[in-house]
Image: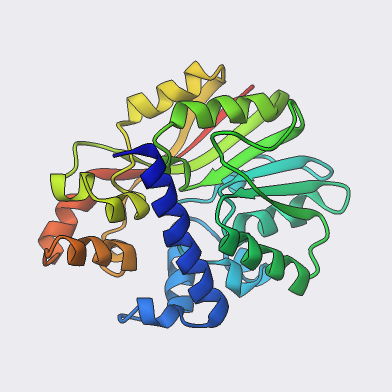
Amino acid sequence: MDTTSVKQTVIDSYGKLAKSKSSGRLSKLFACCDPSDHAKKVAVNIGYSKEDLDQVPEESNLGVGCGNPSALAGIKQGETVVDLGSGAGFDAFIVSRIVGQNGKVIGIDLSDEMLDLARKNAVKSHYTNVEFLKGDIEELPLTNSMANHVISNCVINLSLNKDKVYKEAYRVLKDGGKLSISDIVLERELPHFVKDSLAGHIACVSGAEKLEDYLQYVKDAGFKNVKVESKSEFPLELMLTDPQVMKIAREMNFNLDSEQAKDIASSVTSISLSAIK
């Protein structure tokens, strides 16, 4: 797939998701269920606590993550944290309470609509130590060696230039800084109707790569102590209710039944990894 077209499709798709959430029209995407309940179920399934969910604006939880990167980061008060692909601000808001008023969280996103929603959430809930900047995670609008931590939640798989993303993460981290990432990787090759689909890419599936290739990007960027902290199967029940996965099926005139969804789900794995600069 062409890098430019994929990137624009990502921006457009997540922009529509942000607009739907902001306007209260998100329920139209979820014929199966209440979107807020769906997002909460996803969050609990991937490692967030009820306390986490209660502490952040409900509008910031879009239910599109695949892990809880801040849980393994060891973040402390007063530190600076960069969130790659911050979306509506869910992880940034969780981290903001950890770093406190003497710390800072910087969310990076390419979608104007997502940035608008995140900033509205920040103002509405009085977050003063969080900033959301427009930027490409392959070319961060940040100075060298300015962060203690870089986190990201199910976003880097969307990039076709993962090597650039990890080189940028390395650049902005201070010496001794920590990388904490949740993402999707492949156990085996995907069916072609998913692999070649832009909608599949947006659903965080077709942009995924084999685990060994993914980890090599991290090592090649210069990171040390690269460790897979956790690994879990892609939850089938989330796939069957994910509006983006349903979009793949419609796009390909493909009736995705439970067995076919199970086959796709068995090809992908959710991981959390950490590394040190």
